[in-house]
Image (cartoon, rainbow, N blue to C red; front, top):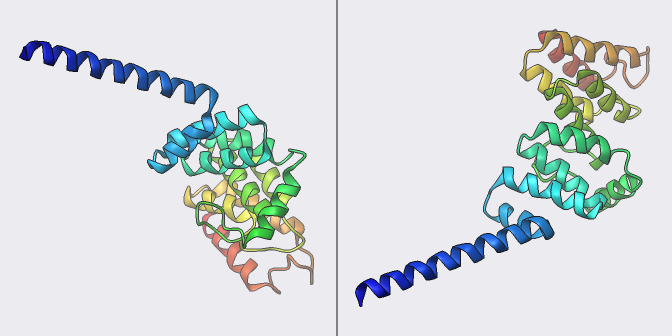
Length: 209
């Protein structure tokens, strides 16, 4: 009798496992949004990033795309963050999405990082991800295309520079300095002699370059 009970229990357990695997596969393929929520609640950052990309591929929605970019960056899936970040910034709904995010709150992003606008956040993490994927020309273009009419210590260039300084990349820090110098004219918003925060930022780059 004991062997029969044990055998029945084993069969029941195996059936439960099979059903669970089937349901897991169904949700993964057809309802990736459920998997995003599940993996996020379990702290599975990498898997959550993967499913967020799958959710965007399924929906094509700009909010899902933005989520995929930020979650990929958080998981250090820099190749995905670079690829989908570039797609996000040319999406027809991008400006409207950023405006809505900025209207909701002072944007810090889900990572609790630098303050700034939604546009600067997404441009910054895209540029940084491109840099980390050795797409340095693209990284510079992304960051400086997004820069405003004056330097802000929470703009996209700050994200990019932080990665280059952290890597002690003298050549690339020099390239960022050259770009900033090209924006500078006596008395304008990029004149470091008139803007202490910009001077401090450039001094940090000069220490590495």
